[in-house]
Length: 72
Image (spheres, rainbow, N blue to C red):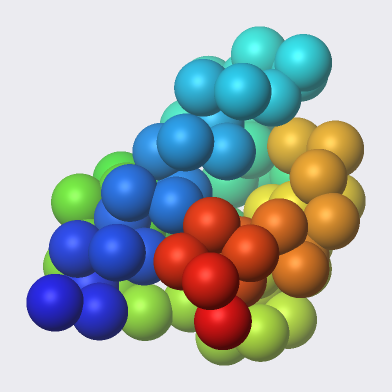
């Protein structure tokens, strides 16, 4: 359940982000590979808080937005 929620949050952020980036571009900017980003989107991996912060920074959203979506 949490993996599905996390996947939905990451996908929603990407859709709403003003910055349009490919998985590869995002991966390069945060020092990961595109396969890792793909696994995050599909809920196959769980990112660290640091990685989440790096993704948020690149997509131009605040990390608390991730938690606001599910009402935490």
